[in-house]
Image (cartoon, rainbow, N blue to C red):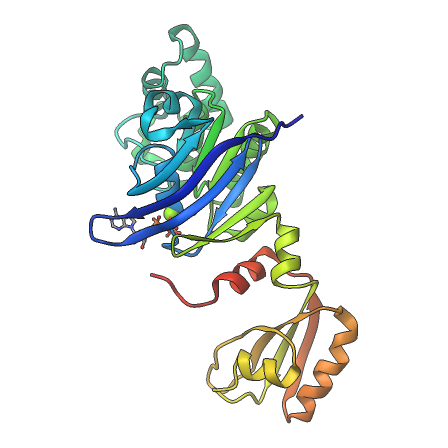
Length: 323
Ligand SMILES: Nc1ncnc2c1ncn2[C@@H]1O[C@H](COP(=O)(O)OP(=O)(O)OP(=O)(O)O)[C@@H](O)[C@H]1O
Ligand SMILES: [Mg+2]
């Protein structure tokens, strides 16, 4: 049974980097004990900055961060023992082997001496690295490095896990291994917060997602709730011929009197794709097609589907590039 009490509590967090860049702007959220939460946001939204502050690597400009009730910046020793962190840039020593990497970490994080050999062997096994344990990290593939970084973060058996882009650039096999480990850690009752740019990763793993943009919270909830709130029940996807370059989502929305989520950019006068929020599903299709045909547009293809988390993300954060 999962008891509800905040394990991570962020209040009014603001962070301004040396160069003057305001990466976080009055950000507040909590993660309950035993929750598995995805932190989403476009590139540069402030995800890594947030988790670096939670882990105590970075001191915020202002605001408060508590982990298991203790203010992080005042309890760095305790935080180290209750929190495991997998950084986005993995931060592995290239000239150590996997075995040495884990032994070094075990000593650093106070794993009892008599337990080190067994725990390290177990972690190597979990990561599928036993056969390569004596090779230098610099000879590993990207997937091997991420798997090693993951088991390093769980080696000292911490209550809270923070994973920054756990499956960045890895193949399907490594990703499955990492996801299964995360599911297992969740089933053991641990509290897990992970940053990702992969919507399918958030959808597959998270109980709840938190979306930030420009350092501010823009949405939080289960994927189902967010879909209902920000996209609606269905999306109509249309392939349209005949749209002028300046006839985008706003124009189409006015004509249809519906919310048009997005219209793809014009490309050499070719067909464009439009995504329309559809409250009633099938019964909206004939009306939409009729209206568009009446406007002189050719509807080459039309389909109806349930929204994905990616649709929610675009509806909330827009399609403009950030950095
Ligand atoms: N050390 C730094 N010095 C100055 N600015 C920084 C530094 N680190 C990050 N930033 C800036 O702060 C903002 C937030 O960066 P952050 O790395 O937290 O974003 P992110 O959401 O993790 O992005 P990504 O999806 O690309 O990993 C960005 O504008 C970034 O350029
Ligand atoms: Mg990041």
